[in-house]
Length: 318
Image (cartoon, rainbow, N blue to C red):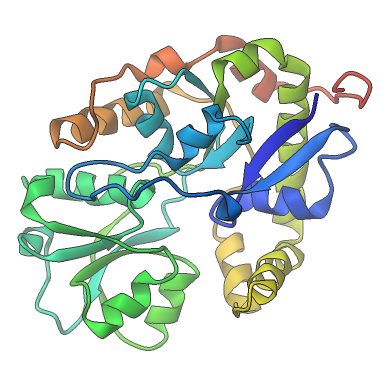
C-alpha cells in the first residue's frame, strides 16, 4: 500500500522531512502530496465558519493519510463529524507569533479592536489566538471584522492599512518589524501553548500501525536533524520559494527555525484541555457547527508509540 503524506511549508517538520529523505528508509511506498497543489474547497466566511481543507482531504479519495498542522484544523474536523485521531504534538511555540497593530494606529489594547479589521490566516492557529484574546477582553467574534489573509501576505496588508491588526508569525513578522514599528496587543505566551500537531483517520491508525510508527520514528529523526542543522533546513524553504517564482530570506528562515521547538511528543491532558476550551469557544461564537469532545480523538497506544518509538524496517512497512 502506498502511504500518502500531506505537507506544506507551514508545518515545518513535515516540509523538511519531505526534502531530507529521512522517511524513505523507514517507509518504502510513500507518496508526498503538496497541499498547495490540491484544489481548495470554497473559502469559509471568516465571520461564520471555518475552512475544512485539511480534514476534507484526509478523508477524500486522492487526498492523504497523514497530516501535520497547527492548533485549529483538528478541532474543525471533529466539529464536522470527521473520525480523526491525534498522533502527537510539538513543544509550545509561543515565540512563533503574536497579535500586533501599527505603533501609530492608536490601537493599544484588545478592547480597542471592537469593529476593527483583524488579519488572520483563517482556520489556522491564528483564528484560535484571536478568539482567545477577544474572550479574555470580554469580546466576541462578532465584535470584530475578521479578514482571511495568507500568512505571508498579512504584513503587507497591515503596512498598506488594509487591516487594523494582524496575527503575525515569523519569518513574515520579521519583515514587518524591519520596516515599521508595531505594538504588541497580546503575546501567544499565556494564551495557549500553540504546538504543531499531527493527526490521521481513525481507520488508518487502527489498520496501519507499522506505517504510522514508521512515520513517527522518521519525524523524530528529522526534527533532531533540523535542530542540529537549522541553516541547511532553512535552505529547503528558500529553494521552494525560488522554484515557485518568489524569494525568501535564508537568515530569517534560519532564525525562525532556531526559535521553534522540534520533536514529536504524545498528546497531554494540558493540551487536550486547551483544545476543548477552544472547541467550546469556537462553537459558542458560531464558528463550529456542533460541540465536540476532543478526548474522543485519543487512542492510548499511539501515545505509547510516540513516547517509545521503535525503528521500523522497510519490510514491515510495506
